[in-house]
Length: 190
Image (tube, one colour):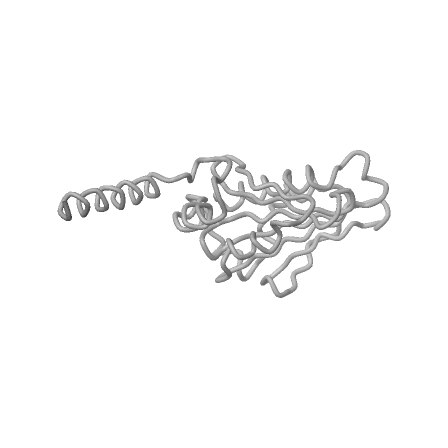
């Protein structure tokens, strides 16, 4: 009896491991918070992406052609924040032109970042292609929205869009941040 019980337990453990290994890197919606942490972050849900070259030059995360698509923005201005190095493309006229900021984050647990925003009124954990992107906002997504792009377990790029009053009707904040996140992903792929 003990031998068959041990065999059953061993089979369950092996099956559990193989289910996790075959994983959900391509799955759009996680089953649970714990599963999300072990599969998407553990396997690195974003194959082929790297932030290495942008850690020193965060403004290069968008090409000149991509920046032109943002509309009336000033040249990128590098900086730093608690999330890492940044680049801000400020609207030329704050009431007429939206402002965009990217944060290149190294060595910070992406799953912990996601957990910090999970309770926000706007929260969508999705895939853009094969890349996990978490779109979030602490209010209603009208004025502002953010997208965390998971590059690896501890590397990410966060895109922040602050929509100018004159552009709110034509640029819903969370739709706009997803559009910019898509451009960032294109650049990260190289």
